[in-house]
Each structure stands twice: as structure tokens, then as C-alpha cells.
Image (tube, rainbow, N blue to C red; front, side):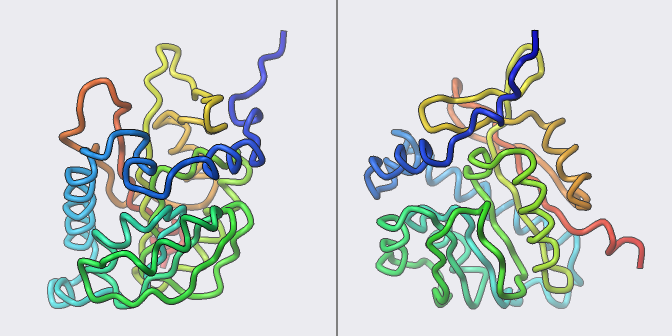
Length: 235
């Protein structure tokens, strides 16, 4: 008996239908757990700071990044809370139009300018700019494995010199070590091993990875990956 791979069950139509019925609020974006937003943003800011320290010359650590992009941005929670503080310009990629419309109206904690807003799914988005930071959080589960590799390859080509792709996603805790399909929003929660294999297929290397601390028990563990093209290490 052949088992259907979890990602083969993903339906973009079902995903869009689910999110179009979610309220454009922090509560809606975080699935009824708005209280984790503060610790989530703090963890992301700390990871990004450590990633910069790990890879950038000390003389540039306090300099803002030129252009970042928030992929699967929702209402711009991450843009407002982090990217606006570390980038001069932030672009938005978000397939749900009512969410994308909320971004420019949000109060930004930093001085970044929101420039381009792409109302399109990540599986269809083709970067038009070069980015110092491509941020992906709680959105990649809506892409199949094949779509994700293609997406990562496009992102790798869109990085500026010494830029990063950051992935922050739930990790599957399946006792068989398998990815898990969620019928509610038509998404897949992948294992750490699956992500690592897909990064390798996408010709990306892990510069830094760690777990998000401080989330309540009962939620999936969440892991950060800081990525850059493998080709950069080959001179």
C-alpha cells in the first residue's frame, strides 16, 4: 500500500479559503495565542543579532540592513516588531489581500519604509530586488516540498552579498519522525531532518540554527535557521 506524502495533500485553494476567514489581528495570525507574540519577537530579534554577530565584521554590526522582505507577512506583525528596526526598506509578500492592506497602517517600532507589497503566494513570487534579509515565519508549510525547493533557489539568487534567508517554523514531533499534515489550514509541519534535506537540495547551507525559547508547553517546538548559498563558501 502506497502512502500519500503529507505535502501532496496541500491545497492552495483550501489554504486561502481558511486564511480568508481569519480575522486580521494578532490573535488571528497566532491561532488564538496572541500572548506569545512578545516572546516570539524577542526570540527573533535575539537570533538575528547573533546571526549578524556570527557573520558580519564588527565594524558593520550597528549599521541597518538596506532592504528586507517579510514573506508570508500576514498583517505585518514581524515587520512592525523587528524588520522595521533592522532594515531601511521592507517589502511584503502576502497572498491574503485583507492582511496585506493592514501592513502599511501598522505602527512600526523602527524607521523602515514599507515599499513594495506583493499580494501573491510564495510559490508564485519571483523576487525583483536584491535583499539583505529574507524572513520566512510560519508560512512555508503551505508549500509542497518541490515548491519549497524552487522558492528557496529563487531566494538564494535574490540575496545581496552577505545577506541571509531566515526560516522560523514549527517542528514536527511525530513519534515516527514524519511530517504532519494539518487539514484545518491545509499545511504541513516538517521535521528538522526534512528541512535540512530541502536546504541541501536548494543549495543552501545552515549558518546558524537554534530553538525559540520561552513558548508554552503544548505548542510545537519552533526552530530558526539562518541560511546562505553553499556557493558562497566555495569562493
